[in-house]
Every structure is written in C-alpha cells, then in structure tokens.
Image 1: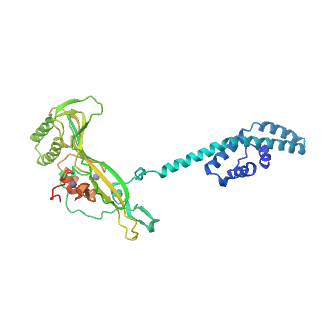
Image 2: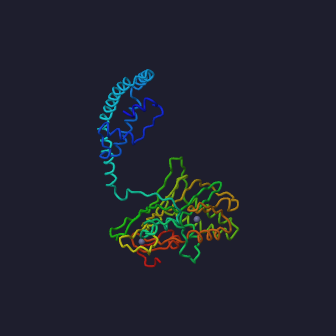
Image 3: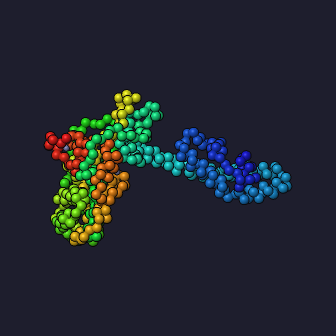
Length: 402
Ligand SMILES: [Zn+2]
Ligand SMILES: [Zn+2]
C-alpha cells in the first residue's frame, strides 16, 4: 500500500529494489523466499517487476488521484487507493499463481542438469591451459603447495634444471619436436614434418598397466582435400634430389642436402609408387605410442594420498605434403628454396652454409630440457635425443635400445 502511494506520486522514477519485492512477496502473497530455490525467487521478482509496470489501471488511478488531490479530498483518495490496491494485488496474485508451476519446473530441470554433471565420466572433464611447452612440462606440483593456498599449479618461472652437454646432430634436429622442412622451387613443392598427436590427462597415482596395448598401423594414408590431382611416379622425387646434388658445388650445402634428402627418401619408401599431387601423405613414425608423466616435486607436503602427474601420451606421425612435382630446373641459392622451421617457436631458418650451427644453437638452448619418454608396450625409457636420432622409432624386442 505504501508502495502504491509512492508509485502514483512518482511512477517513472521509482526503482524498486529486489529486497522490496521480496518483502512484497512474503507480506502480500505468502511466498517465503527462504524455502524457495533462488531461481524460483528470481522468476517471481521478474514477474512482479514486469506486471507491476504493465498493470492496465495505472493511468486511471493517476487521473483520479490527481483530481482528488487538487480537491484535497483525502478520504476519497484513500478509498480509491484501497480499491485499486486490492485490484493490483489480485492482478499480481493471478500472474504469480500462473507462474508457480513453471518456476518449479525450471528448478526441477536445473537440478536434473546438475545430476547429469555429477554422473560425468572423469574423462569428460576438460581443463584448458594456455602455456608454453616449458611451462606445461612443469605445470603440476606432485602434491598441493600448502604455502600457495593448496594450489597444484606451478605458475613460477621455469629454469632448466638439466644442462645437456651433447649437441644434437642435424639429423636429430630435423626429426625433433615439430620441425618442418620446406623445399619450394619453381617446379617442386614439398613440406616434410613430424607431427605429434597428444593426449593429456591429470592423474593421481599412476596405475600399473597390465592390459596389452594396441600396435599402431604402419600403412601410409593420403589426404587430397578434394582438389584436382595428377599422378606422378614416386621415383621423380628421388631423381629430382639426385639432380640437385649433382649440380651442387658448395660442400657444406651438399652435406645438409644429403641428410635432408635421405630423410625424405626414407619417409616415402612406404608410400605408394604413384603419388597423387597435390596431396598429403602420413604414417605413424613408431609402432607404439610413447608416454611420460610430468610433475614438479614438492617436498614440503608429504601427504601420501597425493601423487599428481600430468600424463602425456604422444603418437608421432611423419607427414609429407607434395604440392608440385615437375622437371628439374636450374636452382638459385639455397636460401631461396630451402627452409627449416621450428614449429614450437614459429621460427623459420633459411637454407645457408651455416644452417646446421644456427639450428644446433637454437635447439640446444630452447629444446633440450625434455623429460624422457616411455614406450607404452615394452616400457623402455628413451631420451628425446635418442628418439629424434632414430626418427622416433625403436624395436621393442631389441636389448640395445639405449
Ligand atoms: Zn624452437
Ligand atoms: Zn617399445
């Protein structure tokens, strides 16, 4: 009633707070918000706000009350107000009653959704992390840090703890993490890279794995992406390489090219004899996936129920894209048509006589502090130096792996 008085005096500028509406709900309509779900309360508040504004009798009430005010007939005003108050209450009451079943249904649907969430498989819970490779390698504390509000995430700057003394060979660098070779001449375009399919999972206590693991298929698959393709004999590639080498006079450049061409020749051995161009060819680099568990020790917490690790499973793939495959043409300087890219750092290194030393400097400084990998089948451990030198392949039955 008080509100009604204020509203007729200054309807445009009266802003009702939610607390005021909650008061109206309990005093006028017997709705106890404490026993309602917050979504239900929210719906009732919105209904009151909306229908209070849309009440069709505002204009009439305003007209009568202005008239009676000028006549100073307060008794009459009170009578009108009382009458209109009853009408408004009835009007809002009808709207609220109509809303009640809908609001209860909305709450029921909501709790159904909550239950659905509770039944989620742990593998359906995803965590998105934006970080560098180094940060990812050191992201998880083995046990929560009590001094950091029980955080399990390490956001401190990562300094390398292991200094590698041996320099990677050029052969290993081009088979390292995400290195991409590009040969781009007038008649020939080839991209060759090692790709890694990852699967990450945050686990507590690494389980003993006993079930047998699946062997990856070794057949090459081709992807043409619906473009018009032509067929070329695979030996065109090897012949093209031989022509380049026979015309190369720089011994340093020749050494680089010999290694690169040997890698691509080995890659395409398992590809079909007739190649579609343009097309991408892909095959697994290893017979089994590799796994490793990444964590940062935390000696300050010795709670035995924690042994958190970021499990990283990787499937290495060799990928060769042949975009053009024409006849041999006289080539310009190597920097114009050969480049090697570190895809992790998005850095491109043009072909040059210093290519090997430039790449060695980059990879020794940025990429050698990698944890070892374990074959999911034979459980042998391999350093990244070994894997990149051996094109990510190893023989599970061989004892001379290390
Ligand atoms: Zn890099
Ligand atoms: Zn193995």
